[in-house]
Length: 239
Image (cartoon, rainbow, N blue to C red; front, side, top):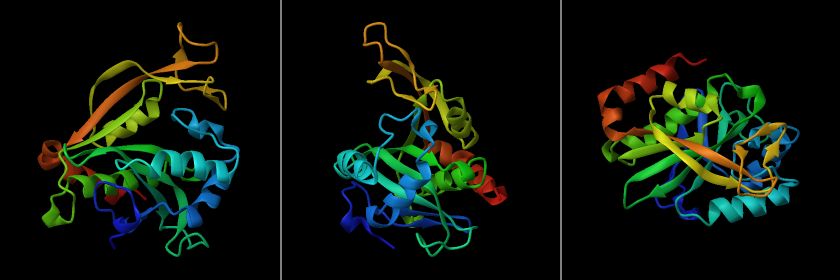
C-alpha cells in the first residue's frame, strides 16, 4: 500500500511487513498518545537523541513530529508494530513496539539513514529491532523491480558512547567508516535518566555536551555481496 501522497518525503513510502513486524508511517492521531505513554518514565530512551524527552503529547507532536519530521523532505517516521502480539486498539495487526525513521535522505544521491530509533523497553532484546531494520534495509537497497527504492547507501550514525547501537548495526551488516569528533552539541546538558549523551564541552556552558559520532554504512555493493542473505537469515531466526 502506497501512502506517500500524504507525506513530505522525497521517496515513495509504503507499509513494510513480514511475519513478525510491520512498519507503518507514523500517524499522530493513532500513534502519538500510546507512544508518549509508553516512553514516559523512561528518560534513558532519549539519552542519545538530538531531541526529547517531551513533557506532553502535544509537545511531542509540535516539537518533534511537526518541527523535526514533517518539515523535512528527507525524513519519514514509522511506527513499529510487533505482529507476534495480540492485536491492540492501536493496530489490528499487533502491538506498538517503538518507532524508527529514514532520515537524511537524498533523492539526488540515492541515499538515506536509519535513525531516531526507540524500541520500547519490553521489546528490547527481541526480534523487533532486527526485523524493523531489516525491513528498512530491504526496501532501501533492493532494486525497483524487486519492490525496493534502489538506493546506493544506507547510513547509521550514533554516539561513540552508545555501544549497544554500534554492536546492533555491525551485527546487521553495517560497516564502520569512521568517527566525526565533536559532531553535535546537546544544549542544556541532555542528561536523561542519569545517562549522558556525550562529553562535557570545554568551550560550552556547564550544561552543554558534545557528541562524537560513529558513522557506519550498508551500501548497495555490500547488499549484493551477501548483505541481503545475512539480513534475511537474521530475520528468519529471530523469534
